[in-house]
Image 1 (cartoon, rainbow over the protein chains, first blue to last red):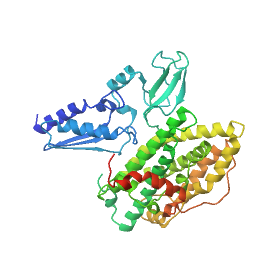
Image 2 (image 1 turned 30 degrees about the vertical axis):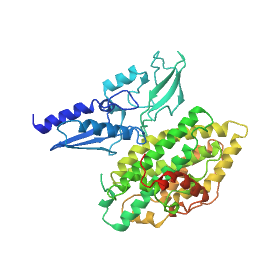
Image 3 (image 1 turned 180 degrees about the horizontal axis):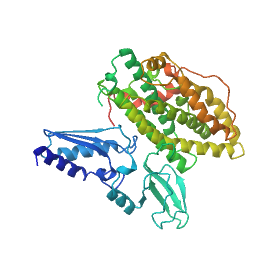
Image 4 (image 1 turned 90 degrees about the vertical axis):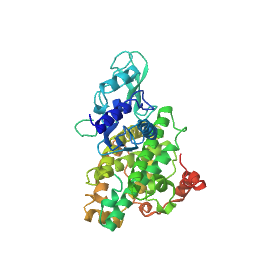
Length: 164
Length: 260
C-alpha cells in the first residue's frame, strides 16, 4: 500500500468516529461524506448536508477538521460543503438506519411520503402531529394504536412529479 | 467552488447575475427574519416550532447563496448579510412587511413559497453550477414550507367564523407586494440575452399565477386585481425594513466583523 493509500484509509477510519451532534450516528453512516482526496499530506473532504440550514453544519465541519488534524500524516485539512447533488435517503447506511431505529427514530425506506410505522408497536394507524419537529430533520407523530408519540426522520422532499 | 461567478467572462453579465442571486438570498434572509419573530408567539406549539424551523432554513439558504456569491471576493457571507445599507438590499417589499396577524403571515408564506419554487426551478434548470445544484437541493427543502402554508390557509379560510374575511383582507393587502416579487429591471433582459437563465420575470409570473390561483380559489378566496407595488429590487424599501435592518445589524454595527 502506498503512503497516500494508507493515509486515505486512515482518513476514512477517523471520519467513522465523527458523530452528528443531533443524531446518534457517525457522519459516514448518515452519508454526509461525498469525497475524500489525499495528496502529499493534504486532505480535502467534501460533505453534503442533509438540510442546508442545519445549525449543526459548523459543528460537524469543526469536528471533522479536528479529527483530521489529529492524524500524524495530515499536514493540511480542508473541509467544505458541496451542493452539486442533493443528499438523499439512500446515502444512509443500513447500520445508520439500525442505530436510529434503536434510538426510537423511525426512518422511511426511501421517501417521506411512505406510510410511517410506529417504532413502539409497529402499527400503521398513526397521525402526523407536525411536519416540523425538534430538529430540521425530524417530524412528530402520534400512534393511535398504542397512543405513544414518536419522531420520524424527515429527508428533504422528493419533488419528482410522479412520486411525492 | 471558489469564485464561480468569476467564471462568467463578461463583466456586465457577471454583475447582473450577482444582482439576481442577491435577490434570491436577500428574499430568503429577510423573510426568514420575519418568520423568526414568531418564535415564542405562534398560535400553538407546533406552529411556533414550524415557523422557527422555516426561519432557520431560509436564513441557512441565504447563507449558502451569500457564501457562493462571495467566494473569491475576499469577504464572507456575514458582510453581505449585515454590512450593507438598507438601500443595497435587493429583496422584494413583500418579505420585509411586519408580521401582523397569523393569517397575514400564512398568506405571505403561501404567495412567497410558490414564487420561490418557480424561481429556484429556473435556476435549477440553468447551466450555472454550483448555483444550479444549490437550487435543486433547496427545492426539496422548500416543499415542506408550501405543504405547511397551504394546509393552514385552507384551515383558516374554510373554518367559518371570521376566518375567511380575515384571510381575504390579508390577501388583498399582500397582493400588490406579491406582484412586486416579479419587478423587472434591466438585469433580467441582460441575463436572458446572455443565456444565463432561460425565462423572464413574465414567464415566472404566469407560472406562479397558475400555481397560486387554484390554491386560493379552492379556499373560497377572491383574487385581487390591484396592480404591482414595486421598488424592492432597486433598493427602495419601506420604513418597516429600516426598523428590521436596524435590529438585524445591531450586533455587527457595534462590533464590526463579530463572529458567532
